[in-house]
Amino acid sequence: MDSTGKNTHSGSNLTKQGVSSIQVAASCFTDRPLMAPLLEIDDLCKEFGGLLAIANLSFAVEPGLIKSVIGPNGAGKTTLFRLITGILETTRGDIRFKGESIAGLKPYQVASKGISSTFQTVQLFGEMSLLENVMVGRHVRTRSEILAVGFRLKRMRQEEEEIRVSALERLEYVGLSEKKSHKANSLALGDQKLLEIARALATEPELLLLDEPAGGLNELETERLSERIGAIRDLGITVILVEHDMNLVMNISDEIVVINYGRKIAEGPPERIKDNREVVDAYLGEAIDYSDLRRAEKS
Image 1 (cartoon, helix red, strand yellow):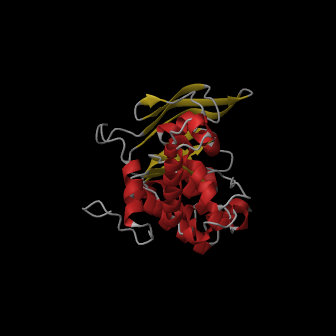
Image 2: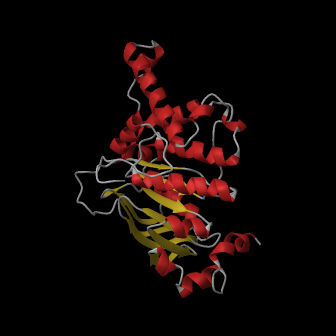
Image 3: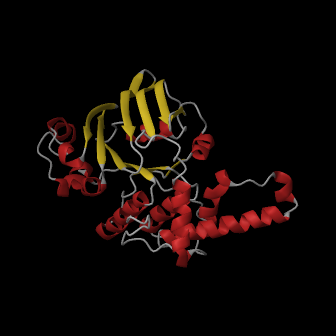
């Protein structure tokens, strides 16, 4: 993003009007202190039958950054996302968004606060078009009541058109607008992942959680995804990324927090994390070759 506030990321093909609308949606926290954490995880615990999946976990996420959460399989990363989004209830501790506790809120309430997420396994409406899938994401921002919808009053029709235009902007942003009428289940996996991101952006999030977005993608698709995530950050949307592709993590992250058995074992910039002995031991028990890490984890 340059000094004028315009997005200069080479991967973006969103119209100037569309970029502006997403930037405005992402800049709703201007009344907060400049560097106050956007998200705070405070001594968080989650038990399943006496087993601690998340154990006294604490860290903060500053606005405007990409913060990755990494760790071996079963470390508690997806559980953490489900706690933040309200899918799971916390056992102890607190989760604060813009200084306000969101622990105990329902998922739709968390979404209305400005937090959106994608899923580890793609979850789309396969028989609906791409445009319709993204329009669904606007549900938390709609204002029309049931009578207006039932009688298709003028204000409802106007809002429906606004939703359609907004959804199309998000599709254009991820490069899928030409396929807007295609069914979601006709897409290749890489495009399905981008469609999920477009739907998440439709909720106008300030914080976007991405759960293994590169899972199953080839090198070219991963590069395309990396460009898109960077462009989202450049729009002012904070990103928390859970990912096993260490090349992607190290290249795109501003900060990384590493968890193992639900506990934080390291936190800091990528250059500090990659040489951390405890992180190396948690993954492989030997020096990490980041170009081969994904293959090593699958073996």
